[in-house]
Structure formats: structure tokens, C-alpha cells
Length: 291
Image (cartoon, rainbow, N blue to C red; front, side, top):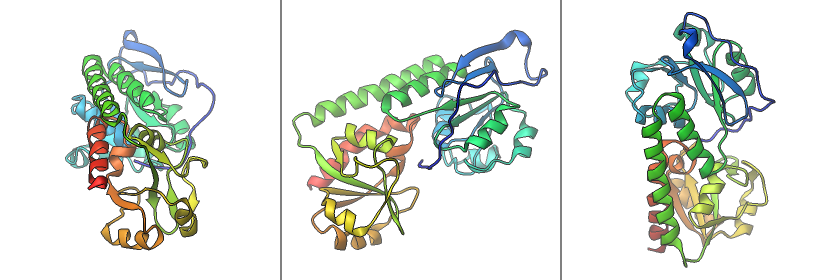
């Protein structure tokens, strides 16, 4: 899921944990993907996820009985929205609800969460942050989260399966010409995924050259700029703006020579267990474009 904010800063001291949450002997120390030192119980028993991608990962690792809070944007699995406490959005938390849950682990992400919100949580609870720009980052996150929640074997198996799919994708694409692509994430104004994003990295792995590779993050572009790039393919993402078929007609007037495709944004931007389905999907997109 795409959000545009950055939580950054120097390594933080060990997060304080209420003494009644776990025996002192169960504490462990680790470092998250932002280089922050985190102290937490092992295994944690009351987990809050502030990121949809990682919520889905926790479900697929079999943590249904230990995840107690998720965001209102955590759409997978659907039944968790009824069963778990909704702690707000990814950028604005309901701190009173989180306090009621008394989590012993909160899992967040550098891009999707707001720095000030995470810092406030980290003063009271163990907060482990991911930082994802590449497939390797995502695979490392999967392994690390699996270790954090005592699901090391399951996480390693998931990681290996994702790697196999992407290795197969590379073999399938070998010798095929790369295609130039523009990936739209928003309308009015048009916004695209550019360099420095996970989407940009996955486009590259899928055999595409981003026509906006000279820009950073999620820039606004005009219709004239889109037309000038003359991409071979124009991808209209399902999120965060839900592009539909009627928008394809609008874009055909701008890029009449481009192959315009509605794409599943979750398979380009979610960096948890959904990656298991990404590589086959990317290959199918190319087949659809050829047809």
C-alpha cells in the first residue's frame, strides 16, 4: 500500500516495557531495519500492526491469536476487521485504544507511518520498524518478523518460495525486450511512482524501465509530460487511487500509442506475504499486453 511520508532518525534507546507484561527473563534485544535498538519479550503475546502489508504477513504466519490491534486500512484478512481492535489509520493512531491493548510489540514501517506518531508509541512500547525499498529488503523483513514472533521456520519457507518465483520470472524474461512504463498512483493531479520506491524496484524486476526514473518518490506530472514520455505501457494502479476502465479512455487521449492496463496495486506495493503472488502476476501482465 502506498503512503508518502518518512519516519527517520538516529538509533533509539531500548523501548520501555511495562514490567507486568512479561517476565524479565523473557526480554530480548534486537535491531530493526532503521537501525533502532528494540527490547521486547520473546515471543510477544500482544501484537499491534500499523501497516496493512505486515498485518497480512502476521496472519499468514499464523498469529491470529496474538495480533490484537490493526489499522482501519488493514483489509487482509477481512475478518480481522471485525475481530481485532482498529487503532486508527496508518498515520493517525488512536493512542487510547492502543493503551487499552497494552501491546508488547508494535510493528510499523518507515514510509507508511508518521515519525511523530511512532516516536510517541516508542516511548511506551517496543516498536519494530521496517524500511523497504527493494525485494531483498522485503525478504529480510519477512525473515526478521518471523524471528520476532517465534515463526522463524514459517517465515523462512515463505521467503524461499518468493525467491523461487522471482528467479523463475527472471528466467522467463531472459531475452525479452524491456518495455518503458509509467505507473500512475493518483488522478487530479496525476502522480506516478518514480525512483526510490518499492514499486520502481519491482517494475525493474518485472522487465520494465520507468520513464520517470529521473525523478524521486511520487512526483506530480502533467498530461503533457505523460504524453512526452510516450511509454510503451501505462499502468493505472488500483491504489491508492482506484483507477477504473473509464480512466483508461481518458488516458488513451493522452497516450494513444501506449498499452494501457489496470493493475493490482497490492502486487506492486505490498511487501509482505502477498509477494508470493507478484512474480506470476507480472509475467501475466506482459502476456496480456502482447495480446
